Amino acid sequence: MAPSARDTSLTAVERRQLLAMRRWSPDERQVVVRGLLGRLAIAVEPAIIALLFGFFTLALWRKGMDGSAEHSGLALLAPIFGLGAAAFTIYAIYLMRAPVRALRETYEPIFIVDGFLRTRARDDLSERGCNGYVAVLLEDGRVACEWPTIGDGDLAAVQTPALLEFSEFGGIHRIDGAPTGVLPSVRNIGVGSNRPPR
Image (cartoon, rainbow, N blue to C red; front, side, top):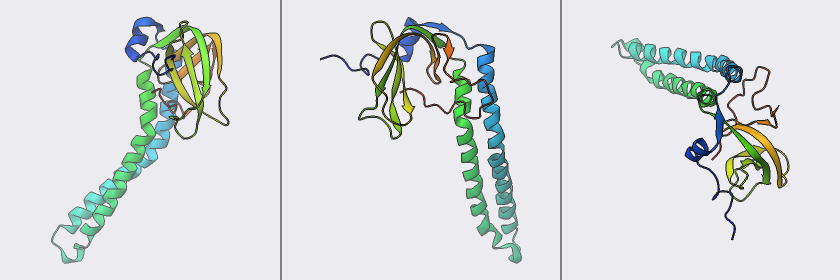
């Protein structure tokens, strides 16, 4: 029985030992920085609201605990604003999580493989919304890295020879020298929203 794709996948350590690598160029990193700044512009609003709600929480708590009878009910409102502050803080962090990780990943290598590009349909372990997988294969058939795809219809099982550049988090950057759009040339607030490989 032939081993499955999961059995023949390279680990992160093996990728660094076996594959040709290069650093991210300043232009490539700048695309990710622009994406991070675009997302930061969106995350500023919930962050400001979280600070405002935090201020209201402290102010209401202090007023409610000052011993004055007319302020006694204000301490009961403080937890409501505190929950709001916590919710908006979590939302702001959630908005920034993927682009910050994408920026951190630009300090990891871009791998270069003269091998094969493979697509395959989803399987029983695929997440909801996944329509298949795209992978970079070495000449001996081992999987250098594989990523889930999202779209309509199942991907066909296709394997073609190609010179590929990829990063673990971002996916395939170039196929035979042609950019794939992983790093768009326009400002993009969605940089870093790709799912990392398993």
